[in-house]
Image (cartoon, rainbow, N blue to C red; front, side, top):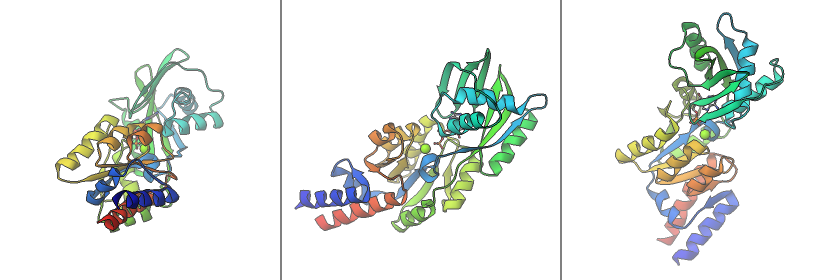
Length: 288
Ligand code: ADP
Ligand code: MG
């Protein structure tokens, strides 16, 4: 009877927009007690928009936006898209081309624009007081703020904003009702992460982690004796999805995440993560 019940479970799953890689996946849903949620693109829409541009004294804000936009134009990151679009549609004028483009995962981008070595992201160690203040202010408003500089000097801050998905708070409540403790995991700034966590009802936040450290965060929870489900969408989530006891990938996310996950949530609705766990547990119960 086992294979039939499993097929019924996974067939119903497909109707709900849940694709399960194999019947053995169901078993792990019984034990999970912790659910790690990626922030950008999973709990939030990941559709960021440009909000503010700040420049140090003596530097033009338009120049900060124009050079940042030129480099970010070559990246697919949600932060990058917001900056490149904002620069194109804003008053920054036509964007110049970029040479020697380099993507630094979880940190930012670099490239040469009009002979200047431009960097955007978390790539500067020491910030002048006025930039640190502008950045902290944007972050306390829940915005993701990145530093823009060229020729080794930080010269501006660009802030972008994302929105929490309408269904995320309800999803967190449903996951809790299944006995899971939610944890928010992100490479983004702590203040931004905490603002999102508060909005959806999550207490435990792990922020400012580099992509390679997302795996370490999952392992640490496992070492504490927790059985971990992870939900993510990005290239930077793929290794953590594979490491988790149960990996759930947003179908709206990257191919890397979908390949690494055990389950795909086709519509990218976080509530379906709770549906998936509920359905799997129920399917297992009918087999017993
Ligand atoms: P998340 O874990 O929320 O999906 P990422 O690991 O992709 O976030 O990125 C973490 C942080 O690194 C971003 O909040 C941003 O500060 C910085 N960053 C990453 N990519 C870029 C980029 N292309 N331009 C500027 N900053 C970036
Ligand atoms: Mg993400």
